[in-house]
Image (cartoon, rainbow, N blue to C red; front, side, top):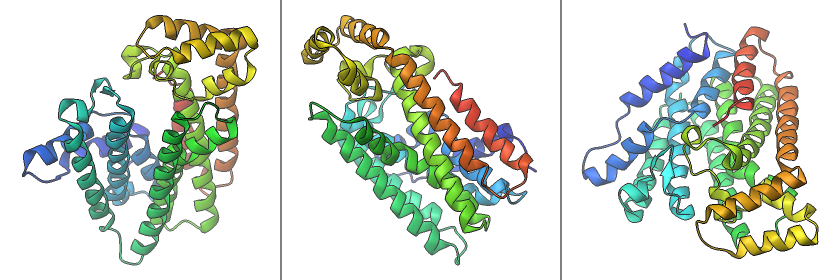
Length: 324
């Protein structure tokens, strides 16, 4: 019986090892095996299994669906890396760097097909609801990515706009992961709603923490280039609030370095210095804590045994304390 997070994570790791995607042409399927083997936190499938476990002792019955969620997440990463021209994924060459962009696009497409194959393993009575809720989530993730790309060409982005973008691009998939596990377990609708909201709020906090770690994280642990968001002028929570709070001289300095399109480490240093001057680092940490607190209030609404909810809370707390 799975009762602990390490056992749930082992179940996921073993399940990923056993997944089969196809064999020929190898150039189509090898990138899928590659990105799925890079590890990562695998928190989305873990959320699905933990949500299921809150109601039943056999979370392995939700494993196919948990793996579908992880596959969909990696599909989005494969395509996002192409759009962002990101060289690394989890400390290793991104798929479009290791192969090429066209291969990464096509491999991502077939990954999405495999996601639906996994969901088709649902019990017949649950399949329509699973697919309906997944399709809504998947469309929202794409909406969030489109907003993210649109923000790149805008000089100013409001904080509320940014929070809505990350809700769609990142957070709704965490909410769906929990909703899915509870749905498969036969949980009441009010629990589905609370778990979805818990995951969504946690997802916003998770992305804000990502924004913070992109600047203040350790390269070896973070798995991506530290300061990469600064170099690409990505409108993160930190940059948006710096633009809003900067005085005239600070804003002039910021505007100058935003106009410098190179990989100069000085750019990272100067803009990070502005963040520190304006207290943006502390503002970001405070916002992360507030969203996590709101998430935990939603978790308390879930009508499941306290010890089962505790596993989920413990997992969320580990995300709050992460340094990568």
